[in-house]
Image 1 (cartoon, rainbow, N blue to C red):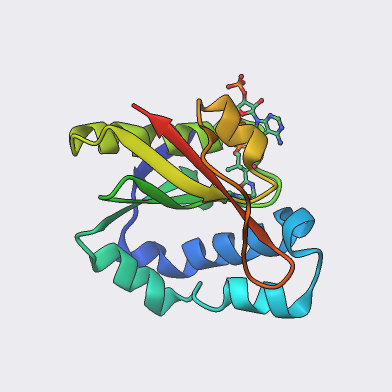
Image 2: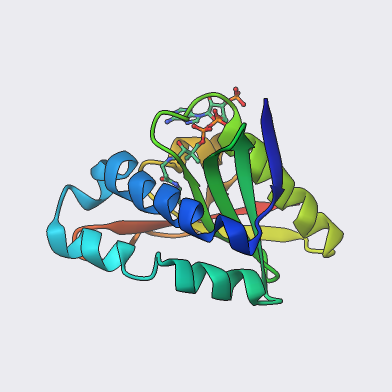
Length: 155
Ligand SMILES: CC(C)(COP(=O)(O)OP(=O)(O)OC[C@H]1O[C@@H](n2cnc3c(N)ncnc32)[C@H](O)[C@@H]1OP(=O)(O)O)[C@@H](O)C(=O)NCCC(=O)NCCS
């Protein structure tokens, strides 16, 4: 059974491991194994930064857990920006991304927000479109070969 819950400091190492593996293995269409792009993308995915994100009143971090295994990580800002949504490789297409997303959307509604935004990877565009997001402008050059694709959704 998958449980979605607020992340806790004890999750830092496992959450960062999920983020780093997800970026490295599931976002190849974006970084194209370009070493500089990948290194830049991974640079801030450290346990120390994760603990700082948890401690910040500006964000909420969620995790998906199956038994003792962390399967996914999401982070939404109080400004309605989805900063992170990454699954462990092998965990895709089982509804886990949607479950984390819906938990973040519910939080945004609790905060009284009327709009969500994100800069999607190429890998996640179809997912965000399925979640009701629409493109909000041209692709923005990201790290190295990567592109950030702006999306938004009115709640
Ligand atoms: C993007 C991601 C979070 C989606 O999570 P997921 O658990 O695989 O998606 P779900 O199984 O919850 O799918 C939800 C819906 O999106 C659709 N969907 C998901 N991925 C899709 C894809 N690649 N192509 C088409 N549809 C897709 C599903 O069919 C499902 O539709 P339904 O609600 O009608 O059944 C996950 O694939 C991932 O971690 N990708 C790599 C990291 C990444 O790029 N993150 C985005 C950072 S901005």
